[in-house]
Image 1 (cartoon, rainbow, N blue to C red):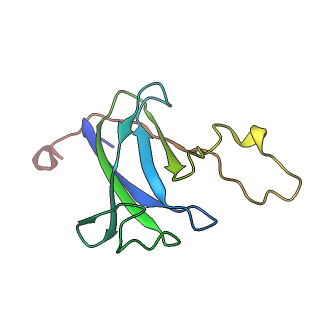
Image 2: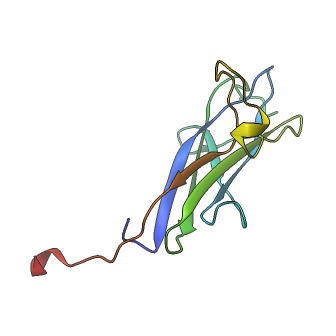
Length: 119
């Protein structure tokens, strides 16, 4: 990654017929958060209790973040019952490794860009 900004996109889902109320994205390992924009259908804002809502379906999200040097991108979701994903996999670890719903983390390196014409 050589840009000072990054577009982070993905999907979130909840269980038990609960909708996704919020998706938060961080570029600094979870110290500061930005609320992502949520979509359910093409360019239609998502509302978990709206009449067109498919609460059981994936909710697409995206956010554009300022990226510090050597960022750790973190994503967490909150459902309509105010359930928040656990921060660490250690908090929910089990022998088979199933039902891991902890924060999603990706460490990336930001490099300096060189103009292609100079290569």
